[in-house]
Image 1 (cartoon, one colour):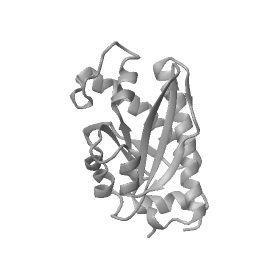
Image 2: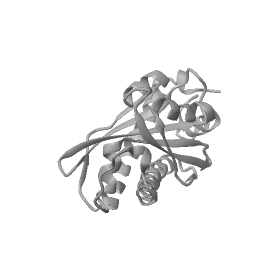
Image 3: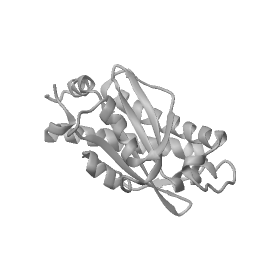
Image 4: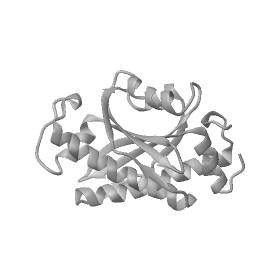
Length: 205
């Protein structure tokens, strides 16, 4: 069995490439959804532990919305989109004008907009993995989980990785109408699926 905590350099490069391609396709999909040109700087794709991921996402007490997307089919795991207040506000205001006072108090329509965004961008990531590996990669319905970063990051630990392991974190920076907005996506695959992915790509485990 392998784990994120002990990947070799070639395996790390493969995971970074998956993150880069997925982020580029997700940016294109988001641009289509919003009907506006979106630029994205080269994403930072890192394998990080719990503490480093917490710091990247603004600290353990930073309140965000997690959009959890199950991955199933030939691979089992999850994507976790981490949405901060300004990013949510910018997406929602593409469709209707609204000032968001708290990210923890979104109404049903606001949540629906974010779910649609998560569906489309997650589909872009899943298609990237499927294209690279020729595996069947299906995604589930978005589940919204508002709360502190420290609480949110317990999800991949609880379900797919062990304490001390790392997760793939894609740190994206979009430019929408001259405004720079950050977003993050966390990919956690179950260990058997990680082995299957590397085997399909011809990477020794």
